[in-house]
Image (cartoon, rainbow, N blue to C red; front, top):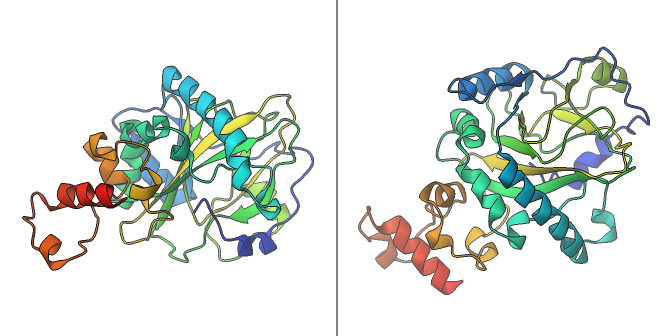
Length: 291
């Protein structure tokens, strides 16, 4: 998903220096109503992506922008020169605060995820996608190709913290799963572009080819990407240890579930034979103590 193997970079094409999106289809913005999950599922099945406006409220957006700006400045200490690109990537955003975990409890955002992957899906990782002012964008690439056409293994749920416009750098998503990248002419002609206001969300199959166009403004264009996966896909991090600075036992039960904290494996016969109704929370309590 979001940490796409660098091996996929070999398949990239240089990104265009101009937006050149005239005539390209736009991802329609759905309303975050009771039919949203079903509508997103239909769109993802048909085109590999879907989007909706008004998914995240303004107060949470403001908190997330502040956190992302701080995290970008601090996280760079961990990056190697080969890791740095134009997408402003924070390796694991909750390292810097609990605010992003509230997204895992946002029903408008998570409802479509559950509908597509199942309610037992969990977080693979949570990172940032930030286009710096004047940055060149990112060429055609795929996050991770699972080769399971018609069956979504990993789903990106992207929250827009700023407006996605022609000037700030559009995301374009090719509407067909393929094992190799489409040529540039075909991609430009058929890729659907995400043009949406802050607070919108975009869901996309982690196996679709996409690119990011240049940010031609004097402001950063920020987003948070939650990479969600089926429960049998191993998470990128040991969530108990990565979140040891937070009181994970006090988190909302649905957030715990989405973090994979209620699916920890027993480490002994004694843990295995704990009562089924109390085992998940007891395993979490013990893991926190060990961590």
